[in-house]
Image (cartoon, rainbow, N blue to C red):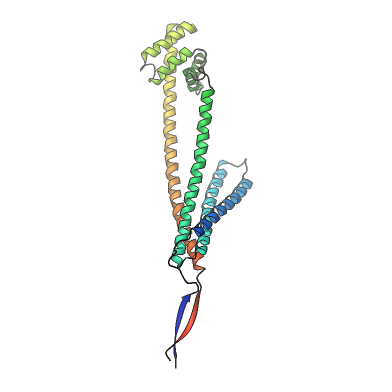
Length: 287
């Protein structure tokens, strides 16, 4: 009775001399980007069709949440598809190598997407800065003076004193400059010379008595201090919200990167595993 042994060999002879295929990675990158673009356009079409301007704020917030979930899901799907293509085309000798091809595809796609995003944001920011700079350059000396700054500050409040100050500083640049210096140094109490200069201008140029001018400057100084305090408090609130939003976005970005790495490894493994078929050979042993 002859004994037999079963020998299992891979259908494709592996090559251990070439462990990476950049052509396969580049192909996976192209598929990833195109798939992401296609799914993003589809999501934009669905979202635009579901927008109703008459909806309340809660529904709009839910739409934003749905868009974020769609973006995350389509990104993972796109990475998986691209990594699967890279793993399949790599001709890797083992499934572990196919997994690494998918992983490298994910890294390349992440770098390309980051480069495109930062370039777009940089161009947008540069355009905004250029627009503001040109606007300032087109303004004349009077428009860039301190009087409009004071007028703009005090017009933010609807009180009668504020409207009075806005009208006077718009007509009298010297008064606006004196008040601007006084405000920048902390108010009437902290800057007596500028306070006296403003009082003198009110008496000389606007027909006020010295008592009326002193009372007006004091009221304006108090009003300015209140506005500045409110602005500082609002700024702190906005800064706190911005820091919280950045922290939250960073956490979700980290999780998205980890999930993307896992999806790419899985895609590379799936693509390479499908290329390995085993065949069984029955060989006799002995005479």
